[in-house]
Image (tube, rainbow, N blue to C red):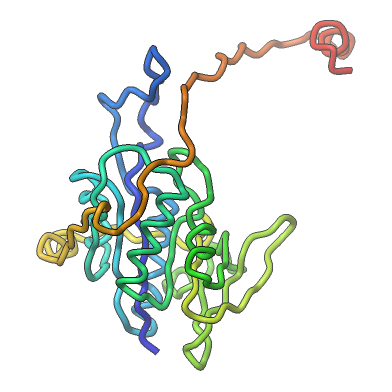
Length: 267
């Protein structure tokens, strides 16, 4: 059965960039900061492509943001996604509103499967996928991973970690839990969020980058979707964590015990 897959590609700060908080705590300094696709979303895009290559279908990549968010959509198109949708919105959003926008997009696109990163690395909230599944009333599998390692033969052959059932009406998800993994079978349509160990995303090829420039990228104003865009969670202020103290060498066990007992008072 061919699958229509909707996958997200959020624009986030590059973790290699130096992040600094503004002096007034109202946000971060964006000058000199590089941006990229959320790494968890990149894994979701890779999984969507593998499922399409195995079963046929279409991969639609979506992002919410301003003009610059097109960069991350084009990156996913260069990896091999078929077309993109930019839900255009300037300003802050929280996972509740993001899930509402994605739900309206799903009502338009009617995908068989929605794939998202389990969280985005800018705020690490890990909520949008769960909210989305609840809004749509769909089965959900979070923290999708696989039993095989990332050096396994299956990974070398780029086989999907998510397994489509023989009937094409359900998908098997191996998800990470405390102490191991568990296996779920979800009826389709479903929402799945992916974890780090599901796959190794491919690099975009030069022909892929050239083709991506000509692929469809639909512009959809967020205001047209009938969603209240007021964030339910408001960040009042940001602050940098306390600077770490340097390490200390001790001469012997007695001095170590004294440091822990007398100075740190942890023993």
